[in-house]
Amino acid sequence: MSSISALPTTPVTAPAPIPLRQLLPWAAFGVVLAVVLLYFVGAEQGITSVFAGETVHEFVHDGRHLLGFPCH
Figure 1: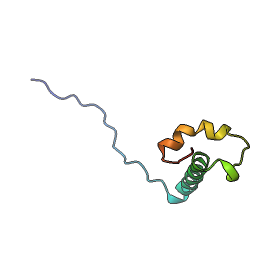
Figure 2: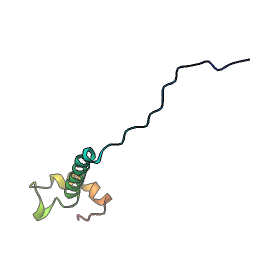
Figure 3: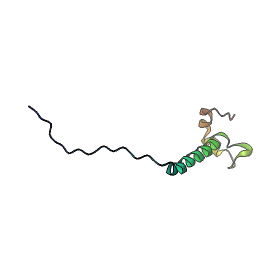
Figure 4: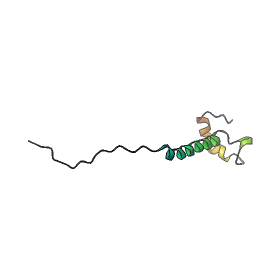
């Protein structure tokens, strides 16, 4: 008969939770990045424009329509 060979086993350990103090700066960075991207996709034109011309507007043009921002 076949028997199960004794293989060395390693104990299974659960991953350690990430403390909120370490997670908070990354979460804040993600929120700031999302707001900046939303500005450039949604409002970078006209009087609120940071960069002169239509370069940014044309670069994010399809994203504007995908997210429902009117631009024409």
